[in-house]
Length: 230
View (tube, rainbow, N blue to C red):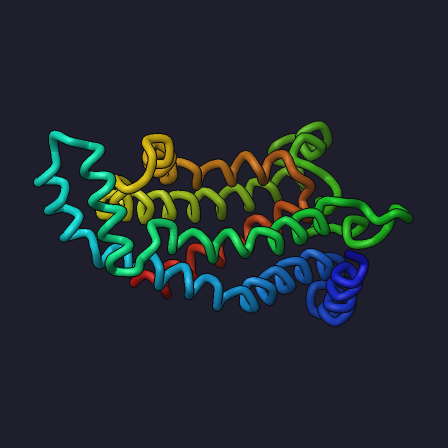
């Protein structure tokens, strides 16, 4: 963990002439983008899996019509189709799951103070301390105070990204089959479009450094999906 923190701090030193007191915040954004770039091959693999599943949708639609009165036969037929075409029903999910350890590592890095009380979280983004939370800003100068406006800016960015992701996920849900999965997985699939807005809650409750990581990673994911799923 200290190795990654050291890398971010070195980035902050390099960016200091450009961003001054906000150099550490800029380093968090840049480091997150660099890690996401390294993980891009896994995202491409997930996109290939998703496209392979989408290509089966016309045939799955035929199976739905054929077995519309027998859900069990429909489920088996869909699984057999996936096996025949060598396409896993979860082929688009596995590469994404493989990225989770890196995401969790970065979140921990940007939300845990250094043992000496200094480190990344001892810096600021404009007037807002990186180790502070929205509740701290509200208790200080209020919603429209110096620190509060930093959070309002982040909330605005997250809201735009969340709305964009919601529309894309809603559209994707209309063309994605979940018949081969369990009823619980199907229910989760229907809830996916609304999960985009949970990022707003995350940004509101985590330290600002972690919020910057979340916003950067979410924005990267949105841009990546536009590129890979066009």
